[in-house]
Image (cartoon, rainbow, N blue to C red; front, side, top):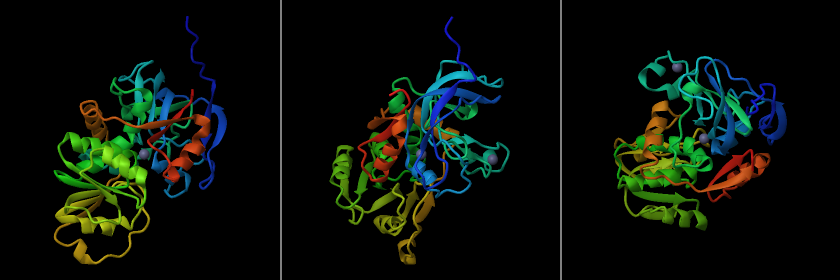
Length: 339
Ligand SMILES: [Zn+2]
Ligand SMILES: [Zn+2]
């Protein structure tokens, strides 16, 4: 017989003790799945900008200590008593949305992303900077077979949030994107597949980001301080920079939308009403719903969405986070416990 997973086994994890610190390697007891949960052996966990906001203490109601990470791919090693949809050995993806109440007016009307009692992975529930994690099976997803574990990890937040942000632009044809990181990279591929035009705004002077946006098929590439060649139907802001909101409002046409795609943004400077008038809309995207995940994970293999990644061993999480903070990554950073 194969040796069984011992429930008393320990695991290695990168833990945040206090906001503003780095994460520290710890040896912790391996978690036990509750009745609705899966115990998952983690193969890959992508590093997201939201992890920086968690670590910097910029988000309220943070669980401490916490294991960050919410773009997790792994394999089921044990199932709680109520789990019916997954079995041992199956590959699963674990996203940011970890639990919702199921009974509030948001949960009952298709907006579980706004549930006031929702709990989030790697923030209020221990996440994926570890060898193992537990997750509520009702919020886990199967991963399309064409993706490796490493390739699939960034789909689970950059992909899902990017997809939800793009849905908020409705049928906009000329779509501007401010902040050309992992989410923009995926949205660019969806835009091209759908025959829409991408206008890519990169940090002024960031030649590598300009090249990257050009390779992604952008119709126009410029600095975030530049005026695009055509009026935009919509803009998505992925950079956490409030000063981009008036810039983007000026770039869109009457009736267009500016979508703020991040969980955190620096303060938005005062701006004249004239740049919002003529039925321009300014909206934010919060979290994701399970429906977003189902739709995006069905769409991604058809395009097929491809991701650029850079792998790090789990114990180099701080290096990966620093590189992300400095804008010094060419793709999504992926933590690999077995690297
Ligand atoms: Zn709810
Ligand atoms: Zn994320």
